[in-house]
Image 1: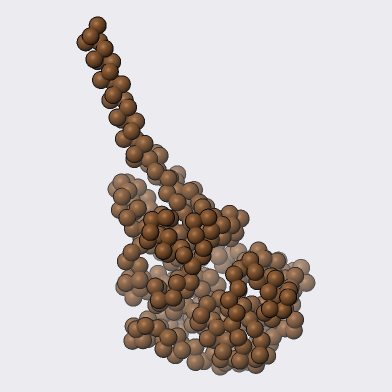
Image 2: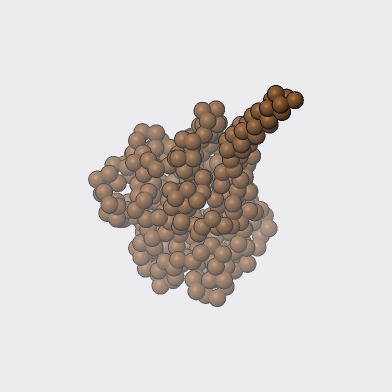
Length: 336
Protein backbone atom coordinates (compact mmCIF):
# COMPACT_ATOMS: atom_id res chain seq x y z
CA UNK A 1 0.00 0.00 0.00
CA UNK A 2 2.81 2.37 0.99
CA UNK A 3 4.72 1.67 -2.24
CA UNK A 4 1.54 2.25 -4.25
CA UNK A 5 1.05 5.60 -2.47
CA UNK A 6 4.63 6.62 -3.25
CA UNK A 7 4.16 5.68 -6.87
CA UNK A 8 0.90 7.66 -7.11
CA UNK A 9 2.53 10.68 -5.45
CA UNK A 10 5.51 10.51 -7.79
CA UNK A 11 3.22 10.45 -10.83
CA UNK A 12 1.24 13.43 -9.50
CA UNK A 13 4.42 15.40 -8.85
CA UNK A 14 5.71 14.58 -12.33
CA UNK A 15 2.44 15.73 -13.93
CA UNK A 16 2.45 18.92 -11.84
CA UNK A 17 6.04 19.71 -12.77
CA UNK A 18 5.28 19.05 -16.46
CA UNK A 19 2.28 21.38 -16.30
CA UNK A 20 4.38 24.06 -14.58
CA UNK A 21 7.04 23.75 -17.29
CA UNK A 22 4.39 23.99 -20.00
CA UNK A 23 2.85 27.09 -18.43
CA UNK A 24 6.31 28.64 -18.08
CA UNK A 25 6.99 28.06 -21.74
CA UNK A 26 3.57 29.38 -22.81
CA UNK A 27 3.54 33.12 -23.37
CA UNK A 28 1.41 35.87 -24.78
CA UNK A 29 3.39 38.64 -26.44
CA UNK A 30 2.01 42.17 -26.60
CA UNK A 31 1.73 44.01 -29.93
CA UNK A 32 1.27 47.72 -29.38
CA UNK A 33 -0.60 50.01 -31.77
CA UNK A 34 -1.37 53.67 -31.16
CA UNK A 35 -4.30 53.33 -33.59
CA UNK A 36 -7.71 52.03 -32.51
CA UNK A 37 -8.53 48.42 -33.36
CA UNK A 38 -10.46 49.53 -36.45
CA UNK A 39 -7.67 51.84 -37.61
CA UNK A 40 -5.92 51.09 -40.90
CA UNK A 41 -2.60 49.78 -39.55
CA UNK A 42 -4.23 47.92 -36.66
CA UNK A 43 -6.91 46.22 -38.76
CA UNK A 44 -5.22 45.82 -42.14
CA UNK A 45 -1.58 45.24 -41.18
CA UNK A 46 -0.93 44.27 -37.55
CA UNK A 47 -3.88 41.95 -36.92
CA UNK A 48 -3.42 39.98 -40.18
CA UNK A 49 0.30 39.66 -39.40
CA UNK A 50 -0.53 38.43 -35.89
CA UNK A 51 -3.00 35.88 -37.25
CA UNK A 52 -0.50 34.53 -39.77
CA UNK A 53 2.30 34.26 -37.21
CA UNK A 54 0.16 32.75 -34.44
CA UNK A 55 -0.94 29.98 -36.79
CA UNK A 56 2.69 28.89 -37.11
CA UNK A 57 4.03 29.45 -33.57
CA UNK A 58 4.38 26.61 -31.07
CA UNK A 59 1.40 25.78 -28.84
CA UNK A 60 0.88 28.29 -26.06
CA UNK A 61 2.95 31.02 -27.70
CA UNK A 62 1.05 33.83 -29.36
CA UNK A 63 0.86 37.53 -30.09
CA UNK A 64 -2.06 39.72 -29.03
CA UNK A 65 -2.87 43.20 -30.29
CA UNK A 66 -3.10 46.03 -27.76
CA UNK A 67 -4.59 48.87 -29.84
CA UNK A 68 -5.64 52.42 -29.08
CA UNK A 69 -2.45 53.46 -27.24
CA UNK A 70 -3.34 51.12 -24.36
CA UNK A 71 0.35 50.56 -23.68
CA UNK A 72 1.54 54.07 -24.49
CA UNK A 73 1.22 57.16 -26.67
CA UNK A 74 2.43 57.26 -30.30
CA UNK A 75 5.83 58.90 -29.58
CA UNK A 76 6.52 56.36 -26.82
CA UNK A 77 6.34 53.19 -28.93
CA UNK A 78 10.08 52.72 -29.44
CA UNK A 79 10.72 53.24 -25.72
CA UNK A 80 7.95 50.80 -24.81
CA UNK A 81 9.80 48.16 -26.79
CA UNK A 82 13.16 48.85 -25.17
CA UNK A 83 11.57 48.73 -21.72
CA UNK A 84 9.79 45.45 -22.50
CA UNK A 85 6.32 46.91 -21.94
CA UNK A 86 5.54 45.86 -25.52
CA UNK A 87 7.04 42.94 -27.40
CA UNK A 88 6.20 44.27 -30.86
CA UNK A 89 5.09 47.79 -31.79
CA UNK A 90 4.09 49.97 -34.71
CA UNK A 91 6.66 52.77 -34.67
CA UNK A 92 6.79 56.04 -36.59
CA UNK A 93 10.56 56.76 -36.56
CA UNK A 94 10.13 60.52 -36.99
CA UNK A 95 8.10 60.67 -33.75
CA UNK A 96 11.35 60.15 -31.83
CA UNK A 97 13.85 62.68 -33.25
CA UNK A 98 17.46 61.57 -33.04
CA UNK A 99 16.74 57.86 -32.58
CA UNK A 100 16.25 56.89 -36.24
CA UNK A 101 17.66 59.97 -38.04
CA UNK A 102 18.71 58.42 -41.36
CA UNK A 103 15.44 56.53 -41.73
CA UNK A 104 13.86 59.94 -42.19
CA UNK A 105 15.47 60.30 -45.61
CA UNK A 106 12.12 59.32 -47.14
CA UNK A 107 10.72 62.64 -45.92
CA UNK A 108 12.69 64.49 -48.58
CA UNK A 109 10.14 65.47 -51.26
CA UNK A 110 10.49 63.53 -54.49
CA UNK A 111 12.21 60.51 -52.95
CA UNK A 112 9.04 58.44 -52.42
CA UNK A 113 5.89 58.41 -54.53
CA UNK A 114 4.12 55.34 -53.18
CA UNK A 115 4.47 52.63 -50.57
CA UNK A 116 6.23 50.19 -52.89
CA UNK A 117 8.98 52.73 -53.62
CA UNK A 118 9.32 53.62 -49.95
CA UNK A 119 9.60 50.00 -48.85
CA UNK A 120 12.24 49.32 -51.50
CA UNK A 121 14.32 52.32 -50.44
CA UNK A 122 14.24 51.61 -46.70
CA UNK A 123 14.83 47.87 -47.06
CA UNK A 124 17.72 48.35 -49.47
CA UNK A 125 19.29 50.91 -47.14
CA UNK A 126 18.85 48.49 -44.23
CA UNK A 127 20.22 45.53 -46.16
CA UNK A 128 23.33 47.36 -47.29
CA UNK A 129 24.05 48.55 -43.75
CA UNK A 130 23.17 52.23 -44.12
CA UNK A 131 20.49 52.04 -41.42
CA UNK A 132 21.80 49.10 -39.40
CA UNK A 133 23.09 51.28 -36.57
CA UNK A 134 19.62 52.66 -35.90
CA UNK A 135 18.06 49.27 -35.18
CA UNK A 136 20.65 47.47 -33.06
CA UNK A 137 18.26 47.41 -30.08
CA UNK A 138 15.44 45.79 -32.05
CA UNK A 139 14.46 42.86 -34.21
CA UNK A 140 13.17 44.49 -37.39
CA UNK A 141 9.90 42.99 -38.57
CA UNK A 142 9.29 45.48 -41.39
CA UNK A 143 10.40 48.88 -42.64
CA UNK A 144 8.03 50.69 -44.98
CA UNK A 145 6.49 54.10 -45.68
CA UNK A 146 3.26 55.86 -46.36
CA UNK A 147 2.55 57.04 -49.91
CA UNK A 148 3.62 60.64 -50.47
CA UNK A 149 1.35 63.06 -48.67
CA UNK A 150 -1.23 65.25 -50.39
CA UNK A 151 -2.52 68.68 -49.37
CA UNK A 152 -6.02 68.64 -47.90
CA UNK A 153 -7.37 72.20 -47.86
CA UNK A 154 -10.39 73.51 -45.98
CA UNK A 155 -11.38 76.54 -48.02
CA UNK A 156 -9.85 77.47 -51.37
CA UNK A 157 -8.07 74.82 -53.43
CA UNK A 158 -4.32 75.23 -53.77
CA UNK A 159 -2.78 75.00 -57.21
CA UNK A 160 0.64 76.54 -56.55
CA UNK A 161 2.90 76.70 -53.49
CA UNK A 162 2.76 80.51 -53.23
CA UNK A 163 -0.88 80.15 -52.14
CA UNK A 164 0.28 78.52 -48.91
CA UNK A 165 2.01 81.70 -47.74
CA UNK A 166 0.64 82.89 -44.40
CA UNK A 167 -1.39 79.73 -43.77
CA UNK A 168 -1.18 77.36 -40.82
CA UNK A 169 -1.06 73.70 -41.79
CA UNK A 170 -1.15 70.52 -39.79
CA UNK A 171 2.41 69.20 -39.97
CA UNK A 172 3.39 65.52 -39.90
CA UNK A 173 6.83 66.14 -38.37
CA UNK A 174 9.50 68.65 -37.42
CA UNK A 175 10.98 68.44 -40.89
CA UNK A 176 7.55 68.91 -42.44
CA UNK A 177 7.28 72.22 -40.59
CA UNK A 178 10.70 73.25 -41.92
CA UNK A 179 9.43 72.64 -45.44
CA UNK A 180 6.35 74.75 -44.80
CA UNK A 181 8.67 77.59 -43.81
CA UNK A 182 10.14 77.48 -47.32
CA UNK A 183 6.79 78.59 -48.77
CA UNK A 184 5.84 80.99 -45.98
CA UNK A 185 3.45 78.65 -44.18
CA UNK A 186 3.54 77.55 -40.53
CA UNK A 187 3.41 73.99 -39.26
CA UNK A 188 1.08 73.10 -36.39
CA UNK A 189 1.35 69.82 -34.51
CA UNK A 190 -2.08 68.26 -34.05
CA UNK A 191 -2.73 64.66 -32.92
CA UNK A 192 -4.65 62.71 -35.54
CA UNK A 193 -8.02 62.73 -33.71
CA UNK A 194 -7.87 66.54 -33.40
CA UNK A 195 -7.25 67.33 -37.07
CA UNK A 196 -10.97 67.38 -37.98
CA UNK A 197 -11.73 69.89 -35.24
CA UNK A 198 -8.64 71.93 -36.11
CA UNK A 199 -9.81 72.25 -39.71
CA UNK A 200 -13.42 72.89 -38.73
CA UNK A 201 -12.52 75.68 -36.32
CA UNK A 202 -9.88 77.25 -38.53
CA UNK A 203 -6.97 76.41 -36.25
CA UNK A 204 -5.34 75.17 -39.44
CA UNK A 205 -6.26 75.87 -43.06
CA UNK A 206 -5.13 72.48 -44.30
CA UNK A 207 -3.27 69.29 -43.56
CA UNK A 208 -0.84 67.07 -45.41
CA UNK A 209 -1.72 63.41 -45.04
CA UNK A 210 -2.71 60.21 -46.82
CA UNK A 211 -6.04 59.02 -48.16
CA UNK A 212 -6.73 56.40 -45.49
CA UNK A 213 -6.52 59.13 -42.83
CA UNK A 214 -8.69 61.38 -45.00
CA UNK A 215 -11.43 58.74 -44.94
CA UNK A 216 -10.92 57.51 -41.37
CA UNK A 217 -11.20 60.99 -39.88
CA UNK A 218 -13.90 62.17 -42.35
CA UNK A 219 -11.76 65.10 -43.46
CA UNK A 220 -13.81 65.36 -46.65
CA UNK A 221 -16.43 67.09 -44.50
CA UNK A 222 -14.07 69.93 -43.55
CA UNK A 223 -11.34 69.84 -46.21
CA UNK A 224 -12.99 69.12 -49.58
CA UNK A 225 -10.01 70.19 -51.72
CA UNK A 226 -7.12 67.82 -52.41
CA UNK A 227 -3.96 68.88 -54.25
CA UNK A 228 -2.26 65.74 -55.48
CA UNK A 229 1.33 67.00 -55.53
CA UNK A 230 3.64 64.63 -53.71
CA UNK A 231 4.98 66.16 -50.51
CA UNK A 232 6.83 64.00 -48.00
CA UNK A 233 6.33 60.35 -47.08
CA UNK A 234 6.49 59.17 -43.48
CA UNK A 235 8.72 56.22 -42.57
CA UNK A 236 7.02 53.42 -40.65
CA UNK A 237 8.36 50.39 -38.82
CA UNK A 238 7.16 47.29 -37.04
CA UNK A 239 9.82 46.42 -34.49
CA UNK A 240 10.27 43.68 -31.90
CA UNK A 241 11.96 43.69 -28.51
CA UNK A 242 15.27 41.94 -29.12
CA UNK A 243 15.28 40.12 -25.78
CA UNK A 244 11.83 38.74 -26.47
CA UNK A 245 12.97 37.44 -29.85
CA UNK A 246 16.14 35.92 -28.37
CA UNK A 247 14.12 34.12 -25.69
CA UNK A 248 12.02 32.21 -28.21
CA UNK A 249 12.69 28.66 -29.30
CA UNK A 250 14.62 28.18 -32.52
CA UNK A 251 11.43 27.00 -34.21
CA UNK A 252 9.52 30.12 -33.17
CA UNK A 253 12.44 32.37 -34.15
CA UNK A 254 12.29 30.78 -37.58
CA UNK A 255 8.60 31.71 -37.82
CA UNK A 256 9.37 35.34 -36.92
CA UNK A 257 12.22 35.40 -39.43
CA UNK A 258 9.92 34.05 -42.13
CA UNK A 259 7.39 36.80 -41.38
CA UNK A 260 9.96 39.61 -41.28
CA UNK A 261 12.08 41.58 -43.71
CA UNK A 262 11.63 42.70 -47.28
CA UNK A 263 8.84 40.27 -48.20
CA UNK A 264 6.72 41.43 -45.28
CA UNK A 265 7.44 45.07 -46.08
CA UNK A 266 6.41 44.51 -49.70
CA UNK A 267 3.16 42.88 -48.58
CA UNK A 268 2.45 45.88 -46.33
CA UNK A 269 3.29 48.29 -49.15
CA UNK A 270 0.86 46.50 -51.47
CA UNK A 271 -1.93 46.84 -48.90
CA UNK A 272 -1.05 50.51 -48.34
CA UNK A 273 -0.97 51.38 -52.05
CA UNK A 274 -4.07 49.39 -52.94
CA UNK A 275 -6.05 51.00 -50.13
CA UNK A 276 -4.82 54.48 -51.05
CA UNK A 277 -5.91 54.01 -54.67
CA UNK A 278 -9.28 52.53 -53.72
CA UNK A 279 -10.09 55.42 -51.39
CA UNK A 280 -9.05 58.01 -53.98
CA UNK A 281 -11.19 56.31 -56.63
CA UNK A 282 -14.18 56.27 -54.30
CA UNK A 283 -13.93 59.98 -53.54
CA UNK A 284 -13.42 60.88 -57.19
CA UNK A 285 -16.51 58.92 -58.18
CA UNK A 286 -18.53 60.48 -55.38
CA UNK A 287 -17.92 63.90 -56.89
CA UNK A 288 -18.09 65.82 -53.62
CA UNK A 289 -14.32 66.27 -53.29
CA UNK A 290 -12.35 68.59 -55.57
CA UNK A 291 -9.10 67.03 -56.79
CA UNK A 292 -6.47 69.45 -58.07
CA UNK A 293 -4.38 67.42 -60.51
CA UNK A 294 -1.22 69.19 -61.61
CA UNK A 295 0.22 69.10 -65.11
CA UNK A 296 4.00 69.01 -65.65
CA UNK A 297 4.33 72.79 -65.44
CA UNK A 298 2.27 72.90 -62.26
CA UNK A 299 4.32 70.14 -60.62
CA UNK A 300 7.53 71.90 -61.62
CA UNK A 301 6.51 74.92 -59.53
CA UNK A 302 6.15 72.72 -56.43
CA UNK A 303 9.46 70.99 -57.14
CA UNK A 304 11.16 74.35 -57.41
CA UNK A 305 9.58 75.63 -54.18
CA UNK A 306 11.04 72.70 -52.24
CA UNK A 307 14.32 72.48 -54.15
CA UNK A 308 16.25 73.21 -50.96
CA UNK A 309 14.61 70.38 -49.03
CA UNK A 310 17.36 67.82 -49.55
CA UNK A 311 20.08 70.19 -48.37
CA UNK A 312 17.96 71.22 -45.38
CA UNK A 313 17.42 67.59 -44.39
CA UNK A 314 21.13 66.79 -44.55
CA UNK A 315 22.01 69.92 -42.57
CA UNK A 316 19.54 68.99 -39.85
CA UNK A 317 21.01 65.52 -39.19
CA UNK A 318 23.48 64.81 -36.35
CA UNK A 319 25.95 63.28 -38.83
CA UNK A 320 25.74 65.37 -42.00
CA UNK A 321 28.26 63.23 -43.90
CA UNK A 322 26.32 60.03 -43.21
CA UNK A 323 23.09 61.80 -44.11
CA UNK A 324 24.50 63.03 -47.43
CA UNK A 325 25.67 59.52 -48.28
CA UNK A 326 22.31 58.02 -47.32
CA UNK A 327 20.44 60.62 -49.37
CA UNK A 328 22.51 59.92 -52.49
CA UNK A 329 22.01 56.19 -52.03
CA UNK A 330 18.24 56.69 -51.60
CA UNK A 331 18.12 58.73 -54.80
CA UNK A 332 20.04 55.99 -56.58
CA UNK A 333 17.58 53.35 -55.39
CA UNK A 334 14.68 55.57 -56.43
CA UNK A 335 16.19 55.88 -59.89
CA UNK A 336 16.76 59.63 -59.74
